[in-house]
Image (cartoon, rainbow, N blue to C red; front, top):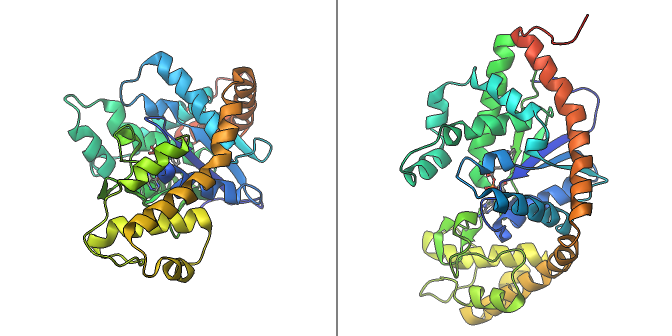
Length: 340
Ligand code: TYM
């Protein structure tokens, strides 16, 4: 289904700056983006309009937007190969979101697990929070995206974008490509180090022991990993038994940062205790993040260069999103505002 012309595979994904980026964001999402960027046509967005569905300090939001841009680059996204841009710089996202709102039943939105979780924590729930996944659908659909590489927690939102695309296409005729969520085989759900029953979350990343953040200093990483919750057993092996979730999580992190096979990892830790596991995991993370931390420190100094790259990205994104939103407006029956 959809209208795939003869072109390179299109990939779209994004991150919301609601806290500090952690290794879950990197292993679940950004690493996949870097891996596909040479062969695909990529759009990687900094979703500032999503960020304000939770009240934000305007000064901080501007700063965090640049920080996220620097992190994208530090993680290996290349502005020559990928279009890196800020969502609010491309007006088509808001316009398309409004139109998609008008084909999306509220019941679909109320069923979203992230909405249920986030709205429970609020005294008064903002309309934007309920509407959040429709804006996400607009992000994805505007670029005729074939694939959306995300961690497990975003799969439901991408599936909703598929439903919205299919419904729009049924009502107004073939318009949108129906996108596929793409999850990594390993690392789609990195768990909180202090609570392996739950995912590592940006909103909790400030809590000591919860997460390793991408720009953490080596000693902070060692401290965090040393206090990771494991279990009372001794076995160090991959597996999905609930009581071994903490150990499995550490092993997955080790696997992803070292690139070693699972059998070799289990052999390496055979006969060793959890203290050794934590020591080696911490060192693997430190080595893996070292180039990111170093590049980030340089990139964040140069605001003018970051702004220049984001302006370039916005121009490239607009060149795709603006004609698409015009097509959508025409399909729903809006009169063209152009003369003649
Ligand atoms: P966000 O900012 O919460 O997360 C960014 C990416 O990181 C992944 N992720 C994880 N992966 C593995 N383990 C974890 N513990 C973990 N935590 C987060 C997420 O799955 C995601 O891929 N709504 C989106 C942003 C967005 C978007 C889009 C994504 C807006 N528009 C269009 C894709 C396409 C969000 O808040 O992700």
